[in-house]
Amino acid sequence: MIKDTMSKISITKTENSKLKDVDFNNLSFGSVFSDHMLVCEYKNGAWEAPKITPYQPITLDPSAKIFHYGQSIFEGMKAYKDANEDVFLFRPLDNFKRLNISAKRMAIPELPEAYFMDGLKTLLELDSDWIPTNEGSSLYIRPFIFASGEGFHASPADAYKFIICSAPSGAYFSGKVKVLIEEKYSRSANGGVGFAKAGGNYAGQFYPTQLAIAKGYNQVIWTDDNTHEYIEEAGAMNIFIRINDTLITGPTSDRILDGITRKSIIDIANDEGIAVEVRKITVSEVVEASKNGSLKEMFGAGTAAVISPISGYGHRGQDYDLPDLENTYASILKKRITDIQTNKTEDKFGWRVKI
Ligand code: PLP
Ligand code: COI
Image 1: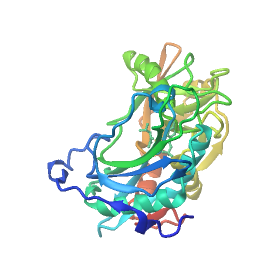
Image 2: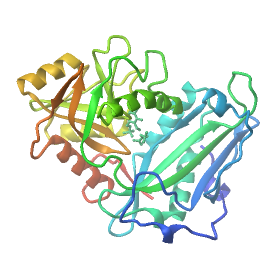
Image 3: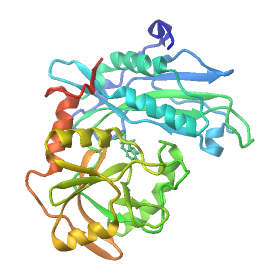
């Protein structure tokens, strides 16, 4: 732990806040950016003290390894403000730990905890006016690290940048989502980088997702790369499937991101008395459940989208609709998790962190 990080963070404030230009009643996701960003450089074998500067473009050499070899990882988290203007994060240490899990896999030097946590806190204190308070909105925070070091040699860079910037954001998806069960393309494989939040994982999803969108779906359901028989993730979200009254989600693995929303939903569902099974779930089990009427709900879970109900899915040229139920598990769990995040309810799990 680095002592006294707060005093080491240099701060240059903007002289030209963009806050007045933002319509907080009409926020899309991640398209306007708050006034400041945190930048921390890795050079000569060590992370240097963070600097907070006005939000601005960065200059890189064309040979920076991020451009050629994709050494890049990120996190996604949110800040919330309650009715008293108090600011909260949700399980931020889990994002920090996962960033370093991703870093290790991508041969990126691990970041000291204090630079992440104290840097984040300082940045949020400065940009706290950017945290929306409208229902369903929050400040989406994007910490990321990439290889800024130069050279065409295919080996890890010797310099990196860790940046945190943020965007006041509304819903990730508007409305329900129709998905296509993917049987040709894969987002991850055993021994690969699927468990890491590596930028390239997302680039690799774009093309299959474009194909699904062209067929009238919004997202792809990823299945395992080996047999395409096991359901793994929903786009960039973990997936939950309700058959009769049991909520099922797959176990995390090399191929599946260990989602913070996913593990919180499992704990909340247990606490609500909802039967939860963490086990492999096959496509045939889901199709069979559709046919016999026991498939009640499917939803994606992730920081950006929170809980995103799936209205139907396509499989081998056949479309299956999900029933339109009242009091869905998705709605109960979404309310409970967002009430915890926004300090509207007791947090018996100790997940909420006041800034
Ligand atoms: N799965 C993938 C591939 C993701 O990119 C994300 C988003 O972060 C998730 C799942 C959900 O993870 P979390 O709930 O930690 O945001
Ligand atoms: C998140 O849910 O925070 C993510 O990182 C998904 C992202 C691709 C928008």
